[in-house]
Image 1: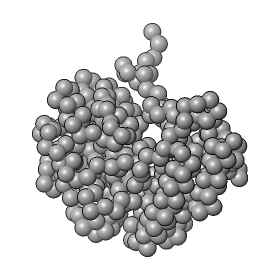
Image 2: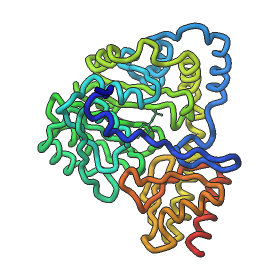
Image 3: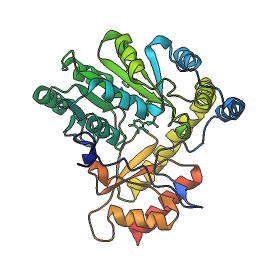
Length: 360
Ligand SMILES: *Cc1c(COP(=O)(O)O)cnc(C)c1O
């Protein structure tokens, strides 16, 4: 007899992160913040180096208080994690088991599939229309499968699209009371539309909505692994039972507090993104490429299905120019590439390279 993990574990395809950039190349494959992070966060991280022999505060209280103050919510309804990835994993650990179903939309974030499979649950995807979540399709899948968890990234990665508050409310209204709606707002800070709702405003009106947030994107702290969830007290209590006692490290807590208080850096990141998202969308669209309208810090670009002009040809061409982007085949998007917004120079290089690629 050989040692075996639980059934289903060996069916999991390990998550493949965006490719690293070789020396001198620009990494536009992981939606990292082009501006880096808040200098104050970096300083707080460095100062924490004097205390690395001390255990962190297991409850991350000062960080939760800083988040609560910035967001106008009760810190008791927040739980922090090593990235929002960990929060998603904890939700799976707590609420899913063999025989359960998880629902996502067609191009949902790949981590949702991992979370389902790690718990022995099955994942079901509802078709999207125009690379956007289709609430009617989601509701039809809810009736058919009665999922325990519905994961919805709003806006979504890798599509960059979003659905308005009224649609979220309609989706929620169609869920059984014992189904948890997880609204993943990893890119929420980038969205500037009066009809956008991250979910923060819905949590206290319902017992089965939890919102996940991250320091990896607008705050530019992907390397320290820091995220959090805001939810009803009973869900937060459950997450506190299943998390590791010191799941968020001490330098991450200190950098996170500094980052959440540096509103100027967040505004700067948002303004930079708005400007260059518009630039890339317009430039690439002008080359005859279809660009899915994005509100995030990346664009999903669709390539022709003609020899020499396919997504994989473009990927190779960009790589040869020192531009590393994301292949989205694992999402079922073999004819597209996802390109993160970079610094001005990077974005101009992407536009120039793709102009050359399309013209050649
Ligand atoms: C980047 C991203 C996250 C954040 O992951 P972290 O673990 O917090 O770095 C969560 N959800 C989506 C959809 C993302 O794209």
